[in-house]
Amino acid sequence: MMTQGKRPSWDSYFMQLAFMVAGRSTCLRRQVGAILVKEKQILSTGYNGSPSGLLHCNEVGCLRQNLGVPSGERHEICRAVHAEQNALVQAAKHGVAIRAADLYVTHQPCVLCTKLIINAGILRVVYTHSYPDQLAVAMASEAGLELVQLEAKHEARGAMHDI
Image (tube, rainbow, N blue to C red; front, side):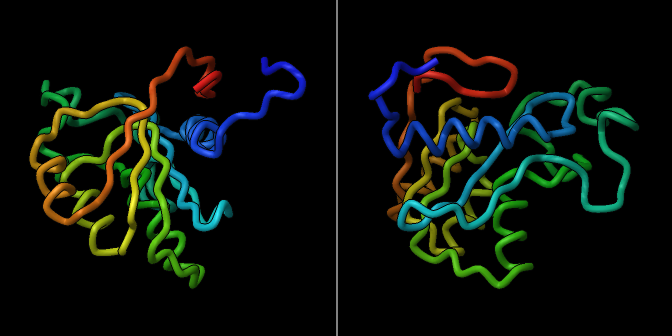
């Protein structure tokens, strides 16, 4: 709980909200939330889960988990749409311009999401948890996409506190 008079930084504020969004995730392996922000205004949110109208992993199980696929591999056999992808798709679906926005996401984006983020014109990605994908980091660097990792002090039920 924050003390009166002490406000979180903008990065901490939006990251806390990303962790709240992650609470909607239906993934059995990793709950991820994402928020697209421009000029301190939220444009779109997303969490990882199956496409609209399809059964979720928490209902039918996780194929990658059942096959023992390590983290960061074989994304193509996952039912879920990644949080970053869902935030981008929701913005497009509703005609929201996201060029030059910042993306706050609970976990460092994978290479699939990084490529979409670059092409969408996102300037900065702020995340808390690292992810084992060096190609994503290399591509972000080559594209001039700023990656900023925030330190998390503690989490509680999907929400971040004191970032």
